[in-house]
Image (cartoon, rainbow, N blue to C red; front, side, top):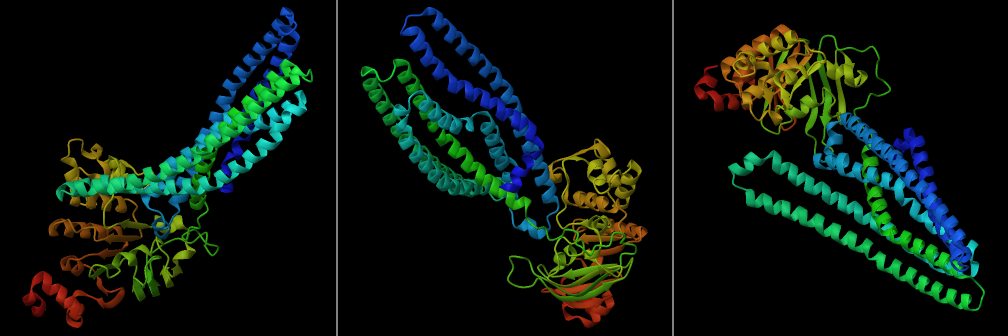
Length: 576
């Protein structure tokens, strides 16, 4: 929680002003019963209209001051709460941008979205209400008891018994409710996850006619959230009758004992009325404690969830051995005895991998699904870190490069192309800050998508739907490749990103890439693509089985020969 509330430091002044203005309201609220008692004793009992008017005027004036203070307090409280929420969201977003894939695997997307929205809003609302009214409630209880002792100590003795007992009871409720609200927030995560998956896969759901299944899945998650929320709120709300019962008993005792004292001449009617007013204010303030407990319990749960993300150690941060002047010049890549295991996996995905790719060489990586090809790629830009071994670029360990320099020299096209909402120009230009129109057109031309773009209604300004929904698979792949090419990378990595292209388009694309003079790594399932590479790396079950040209592997590797047979037939394989 300390980490989250450190974001309040820039708002010390407005928060202090809001708190001071709240104290003005508090002072007025504590003084009004006192002046009411004075008006009764000096004016009403003695039938002195002058005193009634005087004390009445003072009370009206104080109420107006309290009204103005409340309005200004709301302004500063809002400024503090909204500014805090903005800063936390910005920092949270910046933090997530530093996450490696291993870090991202720790939190589902729905959980991060809930933290950005629901959790931040819970804390924001609590801060506002704390500066506006919530911090006033305990102060009214304390101030009311003190003022009651000033007016009549004997009548006020009842507070010394009831108030401490109620405070201890409330602290217990707060502790239990905090744990319950933490489970509620996790249920919110689950509902968001199901909803997000459903919306993202709506076309697949309709194609498979699985609407009823998805409705049931959402109903289960939603029912669990409703049940946990209901149990939590019932528990907290059940404290209200207990609080009011104890305070009402106190009020009855004050009225009875006050009547006895007034009859015996040991106190005045005004003092009894004043003590009753303080008792009612204390009772109303304590009744607010249920709301305060719920707010602070939810805030505590949300703050812990945010702190968990904000304080997480990212395993791809620049390390102490980073060389400030290190730059990727040629793009030579060398793996030395590299093994890799996903955090949640039971065995290694890559096993003692060693190979070298010379500068400007084109290497095709081929192998069965699950053989570790994509994992091999993801270690180069340090999206994951090797479990063992080292990876070198231009003779230097990848960890010796600044993250910005390392990734800035790599053009990476993932297996599933992702386009952002915006124009085609925006999506291609996204690969390079300040990209010119000429650079965008050049990259699109080399990616073999330029002519297709010109046939669209708005050409390069055509709007791309969410995740490129209005484009074909091949169009999305080529736009993604253009986005990588515009960087003019030293290392280009294509993760099966030409699978939707026909052979002629793919051939022109690979030919155009040669002009970029970059080291090129291509994951592919097509032998026709692999043949165009300088060398082919054959993988199986996380190990390198063979490295060589098409003809060399055809002659030396039984597995490679089987792959060729599956695509071209035995005649072709044995003819070679």
